[in-house]
Length: 290
Image (tube, rainbow, N blue to C red; front, side, top):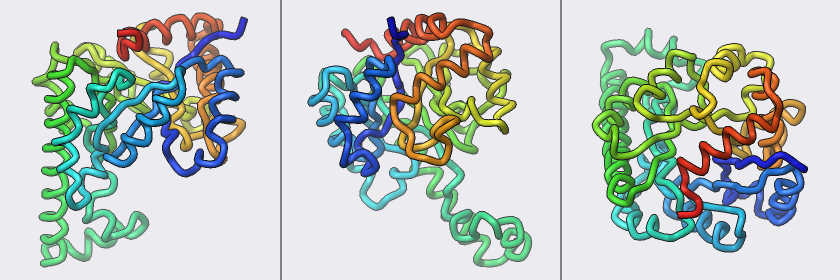
């Protein structure tokens, strides 16, 4: 019998899947990926994700506003409509929401390769001040969107899928008052064992992607070994982060099995053991059958 897994974070509404979605779902099923959670990032994405979930018994939706999308003009207006959308029976969490400081306006203006030089040359200048103001405004908008979505999740009795990038402490500070009201899964987790333990102490989870198969992923591999059996889930974040041997190509939910196999290897377990543990955790977090 094929071990059963859930891809807890996919983006099936993205254009990369527009031409062959049915085949993608079939390949997932053949690989033992019995359920897929497709994640919205803005209003249009959420509505597409929900339509996909409605069309497939094995697919569920998470709806919310990505922190980067929150910075787009008028994006916060979606939050007024999110509560009603989230009441749909195939919606199993709010997200992905959170904080992302990797693409702040000042950094994008500088350019990734020139960031350090730009900062040194512009320190104290009007342009640097403008960048700081723009970055502060972006952080404020992200925080507003994050808090609003946490409120919606708490109101509806849903958990949250959190996106965190270069914003660890601010993300935790915003999430902390909701302890006991909801749980969060920090998706595509790349932090240390200590970071994962800090989340676990507050009742939150982590989720691992194909990054665990990368040769340069020593830190996250150590974290995989350290987390409790009920403290993690598996995902692809497809179409991104395809695991070895597909690295650099389009990722798809069937590759959840490769993530599970690598985790089993790192934890010195059988794949069946990883499947049993992560399925129990996914059932408890998303409450698919509620």
